[in-house]
Image (cartoon, rainbow, N blue to C red; front, side, top):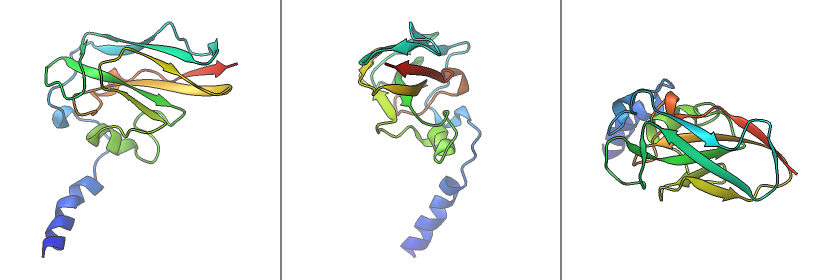
Length: 150
């Protein structure tokens, strides 16, 4: 019986919509807020280590776990599908970002990072998330930029 109840409870998770909604967040993003790369542009040619400076307008930066309205922290997606697309796209919007080589968390409130990237072409995308690493929504996701490391 326990297994049947557990399975029934998991059905909503398995059928989650890929459409983002802010009802899963502690609070929504501030109206008009957005994230952006500082000094790093699409098509840039750089050397490693790559300094990535992350900006946010309209909201504040606070460490993960900080329960304060109007704040969040940065995440950087490296060499992966655009946020919300790919194998785990829908789950990222609803349940938070994983932490691995393609999903860097800056939960200490960092606004810059030094990345050791190998020579070649790489894609980067910034995502601003709440205290639990859940993205605030489409307006808090940067465009994907492509850089070349020499």
